[in-house]
Length: 328
Image 1 (tube, rainbow, N blue to C red):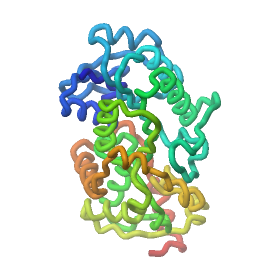
Image 2 (cartoon, helix red, strand yellow; image 1 turned 90 degrees about the horizontal axis):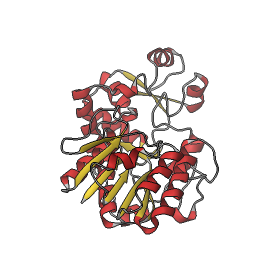
Image 3 (cartoon, rainbow, N blue to C red; image 1 turned 120 degrees about the vertical axis):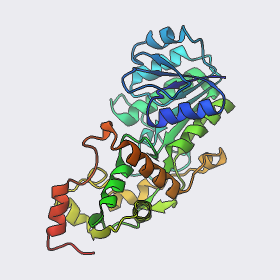
């Protein structure tokens, strides 16, 4: 079938285009044309999603798609323009976010139909995703599935959260970590999500799905230990109390990626993924995701979009390590 990827040139979108090609689809990608080309075999179409004429104009040379996987909706206009141009498709899988929920973070998040989503006009990420969900569902009905994605990892990740930990741990030595290594974490490999999105579009599935890893899949400590094993590092953890980190100006999630303050972490990772599991969202072993990300980083280096990116500044880490309060 003819499958259109809205996005398709880096990270999740590129993995979607690759998965669709591997499944034998005739694939086109629609992007602004500024972040590189799609995988070999996919037809690149270009335009600005905020322009109502751009997508219909681009499709004139290729024809109407049968299926759509939408990985790039960042504005209300983009959602409305897609809804107007693609009403005839057989299946539309949309990449939303857990941020579409009004109560996340901190959560917890129960079954999809039991949780409120944003319904205002705020020009922020979560409300924009929720608005696009409503607009597209109104146009497509039971041919529309929205995947409320959580933390994505894997090769080609431009956000570089896991990548920073891999780089820092690979350097070895004493590494500042929060004393919250038992903090739960749930994540999904972008390649698993990508292939599943293509399948959902093929099957014409509908409704909302919390698309992340299952509750209890790992902990922050488990993830960091896997990074240490994969990189063959001699890194030594230096766990510091939350109050000490915050007092020194360490920013959760930004300076120490994937770390959340204790009062948020206790519920933020508690997301019901029963429907995702019922619909077959896979979850490859954590070590495979980490190892493949490390291999990709060694081959390609830090992605340009990640500059300067997340991570603990070296001078701040040195200060914390040198302080009299550090302990291993």
